[in-house]
Length: 231
Image 1 (cartoon, rainbow, N blue to C red):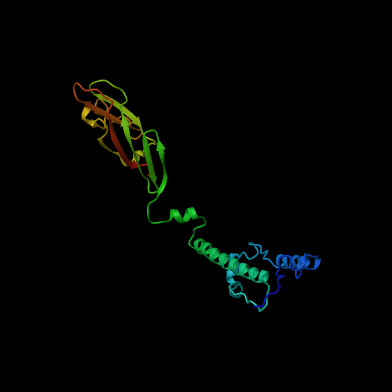
Image 2: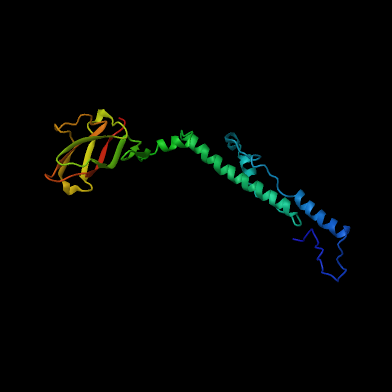
């Protein structure tokens, strides 16, 4: 393709072939203006395709038509055509994807996620000693390291609140206790109070440490709880 702009091809002094005068400067000025006039100013919203337009096969084919480039066509015009065609393709792909989701009954991305056949985390975070997760199926779990904090001898009965209340319609949540730090200072730890009961099993975890005679705490244990946060 032939060039539409002929260079001045400036030469250094003492050459007088390319004087800095109005003729040469205006030639450059006009070249810049011509390029600016033909630069693409395509509005990205101009070719937005509505769902109804896909009922018209001819319009669809028009949007997909590859632009023709003529010999000697200005660069700005070529770039404008390419930009317009690229936007057409993008909007067609995006709109078709949304249309197919709507046909399947998904009006929002959240609807699509909710209809997945696999379980997923609906909420997660930390609270106090706990790290927790709530699953979309209703399963919930939390885990953390409990610290007795005090320093004395003998047994200790205590409790720690859960980060949320477990659902009571599916039985007690399952509590697993494993030795934590300074575990040699107690013989075992149980999920109950001093009387062997679980007073509020859906709201808090009861702990009964059986200390080793003659030892002092603090000591602690790892707690993992699994149950349900909804039916």
